[in-house]
Image (cartoon, rainbow, N blue to C red):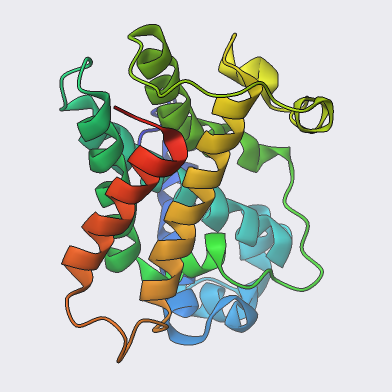
Length: 231
């Protein structure tokens, strides 16, 4: 995961301990889900007195936030790395590379993915700290849409209704001058992509699809051509 390096001995020591605690927390997450997270149990596993962990994570919600930020940032790293290897003019394969990276990361990190896109943790409200890594991820799709529109690689779309245009007001500034229908189609495709990954990861395709790889590639291409309108 991309991050700034600590600059002092104290900050480096703190970062090392915080990182170790996060590793243990992810192990707990894998064993019992978010409900199993216990600051005291993590402290015991780390070999510190239970009160010491509160210097690093004052509450369980702070620990959840750290896990969520780590997860989104790690996923964004994977998607950015995969998408960046594709020629900029090849918008179709940039979309495919991004989609494949999401699925690969989810498969390799199912419990982290479940925390990000599974059942919400009761009583937990994500703070603003989680926004930046989420935006990094969505910015990959935004740039693909922007580049496709600039290169006339999108099918012509009809004008959005006034209600649709108004409903997209919170995100429209992130998409420069893209038409509202293009933005809406991108959001639909992005949502459907994560739905497809979740459907597979959580076992809903078991006994339905024999070859998950082939089916996923079909889904990704249908979304690209029929929802986003890539040509």
